[in-house]
Length: 391
View 1: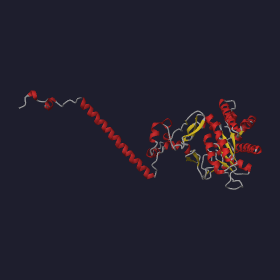
View 2: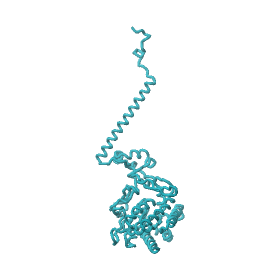
View 3: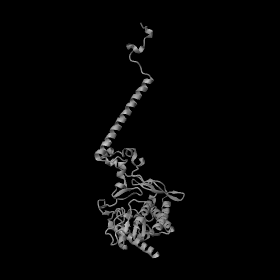
View 4: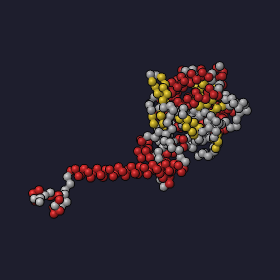
């Protein structure tokens, strides 16, 4: 018989339920945490299965793509564009359509050069002049036959290769010239730039597209970010949620299905800068052009072009910076023995006579009009004839 003194109070129902101590509280927290972990794992597995199922049904490849960044990228712009492992992107080769905001005909050949319409009456495989540059060279807002390389082809009665690419920095233009010149064997290469193209040499990403860039190392150019990644969105550009879940095709499909694209695809992608040495990099790029001239035998002509503001507000700080920077680069080119053209003075004189008439005649919304492109072609033709005369 057990005496009352030895009887456990926890076995005496009259004393009620036993009280849990600190160990019991810890066990309760562990149980709750374990339950949350299990729930998260279950949800992750379900989401993964749904992601796989959605991709299989819609035949979407299993690759790292941020769908938000793609939609906001220049690769999804009005221009026909494809990724390029050396340059970041190029115009889509073998393309022909007028399905763009300007309803203009855009045609490219198998190298991504914009077509010259109508083609000059000369051998189909020969290119007399190769032109590189940004959208002013490619011919934003105008049809194939209205670009300045097309008008130059008519003036020279010889084929001109339009290798201009919308959004390019001067670094990309030089790299494109180095790629194409050995293939096309032109007798002249025209490298056109705006001051903005000099600043673009500082970027590793523009309009959501990664690009190669040059970095100064002990006074020499070193190529970086080559090959560029296809899509590399930063949290500062998209925010945490869209940066992470943007890689999910299921999330993208759901946002489109629920009509939430105004938020999902909202905003643009800010530029990502690698350094602030654009003017120095651009000046050293003139050495590469001189080396290209020596290697190919093609005469290189460097031409400065300007945006409309340079003529509507010539005394503004932005215009003064643009003029100074452009002329400094032309000086660098001349120091290397390259031929140059500065279009500013002749155009500024026309603008001073009647600014309103000048703008309406020479510019469209943000690019050159057919008349503006004709004026550029005239200037380039004169420059090329002077080069020939010098030879």
